[in-house]
Length: 315
Image (cartoon, rainbow, N blue to C red; front, side, top):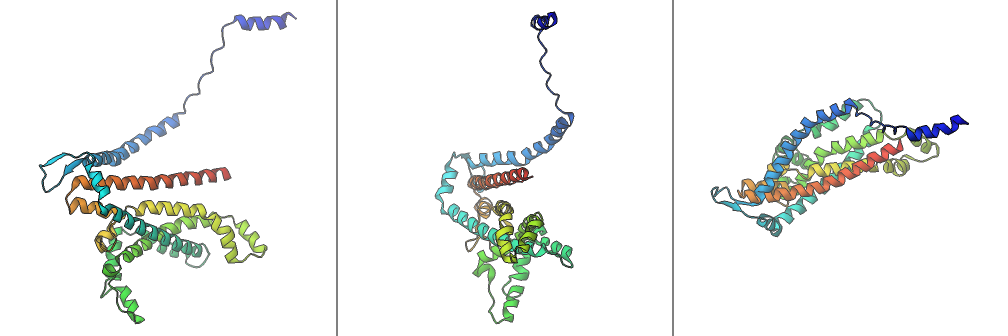
């Protein structure tokens, strides 16, 4: 009885219990974060500082023909960009070239991914050869396509057309936008193929075997099971390819020089800076291009995060 009544009294009169100690942060986590700082600092120096300098230049009235005559222009360069029809025209050309190239690359990449997902002799060599175009430098690819394949007199494309009685085509001058789309499709199809091939290999084989046992044919199985499974991989491929193709410059500069509706935003920026020598106006074009790229990249990253979250919950 005494023990039962004295215990609460002792607790009330005693010193208050010490608060629970906060768990110490793991040393490994602190070391990992410290190792990231050099990479983060380098990234800031190489990307953010040049962008801030570009914004500063975009607020200046600066023509390289008059290097000493330089003053503050405010938002006049941005007003010029928005009033000038070249910006909207280049934006339309960028959307057309990017959209067509991404669409064709995705469709061809899906076709090649389905073919390479099957087992056959020389599968490894075939995959290596299919990846090769994506590893070629854009400038080198543009030169090969311009002089070796699409040249109007000695190109292999016109030689092949001549075998079936079709007259030669001056690809770079008659259909310049088609030539740019061809080069970009050739170069980015392996990128889409790799992503879609990874999606095909991640598909559960038990589901396909069950569909075959139920009597579903190859086409029906692909449309009802495989294609819905590849939806998230198609989204990743389309969005990442769009981000990369928005910055395309080499094929346009080497093959068409912006003629025939191929003047993209990247080439327009180059033209204003190094042909027109309008540094302030070119910087304004650059800032606008970066903002458009950021919008596309934001959509891409959000989609990626959703895909990864779904994958994590599925596991």
